[in-house]
Image (tube, rainbow, N blue to C red):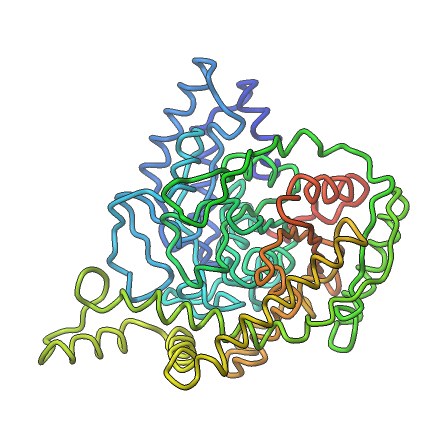
Length: 483
């Protein structure tokens, strides 16, 4: 059962060749047997999952099911789920049980999907490797000595390890696309505002966006159909009609204009990744696409701009975790100041503290104009580069990461080196444009990823392009040994 894609499982459930209870029990058994090797889940909600599965079977029998009714999914532990722990991978929220449901998870419940549990992540989504979690690092199913990427590494490992049919992730600077690239998955970062952020614990509010992680573009289309849409509770949600993301998957790519940004194929890109993308370009040309070189001249400024803007917003967002209202509280504080200091010092991990301090410095008197304001001006230049590029081409094709997955611990003591792994993904978040990552090959048994970036609200077209590529390649069909 776990070898089937989400779309295949959906058909099997609708045809009643298997039940949601059987499917859910199967995945729960696999989690019990295999997740000790991966550490992809923080919380497994077996009891409620089986209750949801039984309700899904009744809904299917009544004839009012959706495409996702009865499908066992997992959610990144950044989405609030009512009555269940929402930890954000942090000691600070280890004991926090959410009193409400996020919009994204509620939409999946309304669709009849089954939640198997909450997946591991870099603490408060701050990281590119899922090593900064309070609950320990998640391991890549393709090589358990290596990282699955981050911060949605738990979701990536769970899907790649066939411990759920698909999962939700969040992408602030590449945290859906980079782990998708490291684990041979398809992952979509929607246009900023396309998916509600209400109930998704904030890291950097102007950059965060939830999205689907699955094995195929077809599966991501089914997931996004549920996730997307206006939400009055989210002031950044865009009130725009949601198209049928599956309707155009089989459209021809003839005449499609693909741009290759020369800045993304310069020094620093792994040779095997470059070769894989070169082969993908030829495949797209065979499908009727036209390819041309373009320029994103301010791309080199993305890393420094991002690592001012994101920590600045994080320092503001994380000020609410003070040991007073919810979350971790230190023992026997001497006074209110001691309560604040020790609760935050003991509750946050090293990477979160680092980013809070950087952000607070950037926003402090005398430095706001020099750092934060300048970074926002660079952000506008990067957005303008994308808008100019889309006047020449329909989509942009580039790597998701400079290298395949690196070893656990390899970059943990060198935060700048870790930050540079996001060099190809951050620009899309700064500009707010959508991007889909998909597998493009393998090198020494490790997946190689590429991404397609499109204009605002072009998710349907991106999924169509990815789907057409997956019809003539088999990278997405391969499974890690033992899973």
